[in-house]
Amino acid sequence: MARKAKKRRYSRSAGSDVEREMRRYKKGTAKSGPGGRGGRVKSRKQAIAIGLSEARKKGKKVPKKASKKKKTAKNKTARKTAKKSSKRKSSKR
Image 1 (cartoon, one colour):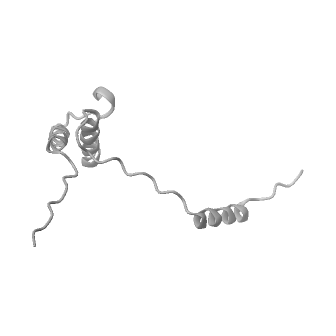
Image 2 (cartoon, rainbow, N blue to C red):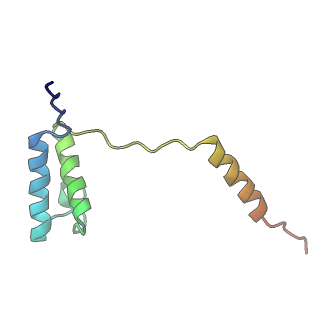
Image 3 (tube, rainbow, N blue to C red):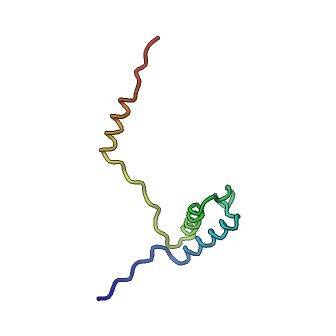
């Protein structure tokens, strides 16, 4: 039985944008911020994120950013009870 081909999550051209940014990072010329006006890029992860965001701006195929998960009701009630116990009663002088 033939296997299905897996979908490409990133386009090849998006990968080339990330490669270009990694070269700048290794050279020490990579800057963060719009138009490269920010500070020096200090980590590999930061360089990759900059490359992907540039690819997104150009309209290349890049997956959406991961969304933050919603807090569950269980966590909310646990936090409320913790807040109540940690509050101090103010005394009048």
